[in-house]
Length: 361
Image (tube, rainbow, N blue to C red; front, side):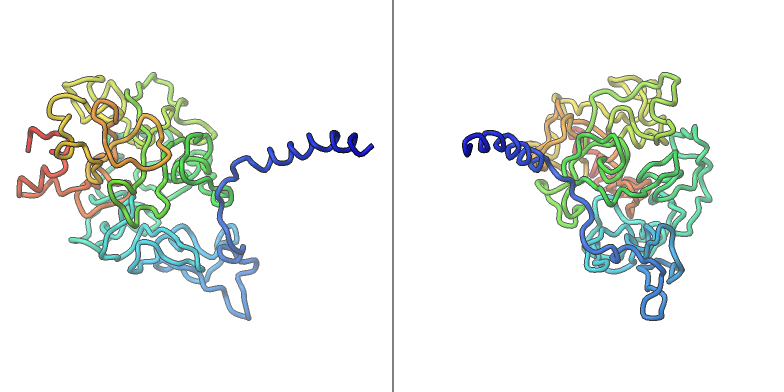
């Protein structure tokens, strides 16, 4: 009788172990009140929000104590701020030691850097700074009628579910971080950019080096526009069919990321190509001075998302992408460039170009 019970229960025990061995997503931790308030009232006073600009103690949608900027744009002196005791990446700050991987919107408004300029980044209207120069995105593509004034999230935003208006709703609760290779929903996509694969640096590149950085997924051929907008634009959201960062940028800046607009898939190109392999011969073989150490200025994408950041670039295998030259949010240079390509000093102006184009040095 004892042996009979043993053999009956053993498969059950094995099954339980197998179930709990499945990888569990990394989600927001801590108490609900870190981010939410039930009545926007505590001890007879309105809850003190984490604020940006005119955002104060008024009640927020979804019972939140702050909006996107309320948590991620503290306008303080640290790239990563403590919000209710939780490390929170800052997209708007005055930290003199540097910026996170996406850059810093403070350069647009001139609270950091060499002076205010709309040309230094994406003019996110959450900051109260509407676009008054351009009438359409560079490399125009706007089949959804979003226009030039974009937001952090939502119908006209980058993060979360764009077209349906779902925005970032619910994604923090089930966030998957680290190496993201599924990317079929916002919560399991790189930095909530729906459809984008990549490897997220744990501290958003607060500390960065050739062996400590984000990794980006790239393709060896840019997308071809077939006339069917629904490949990227559909009621479930807007996402690149090829899962690359450049493909995501191309959902607004199409002319810079489709084969017919950049001049094919091989040189000579009419626009600088993205999602093409950095050649492994000629001047490109000497990427970043020879020996090919990974460059934080002229970055490369990988054709497979690595498990850990790589300290080496591989001409002939690795990929040129939009973020090879640009930062996502803003920089202190024109056009969100990673270096001052408009400098009147030639060596400065080409300092990023010649990391790949070594014969032009």
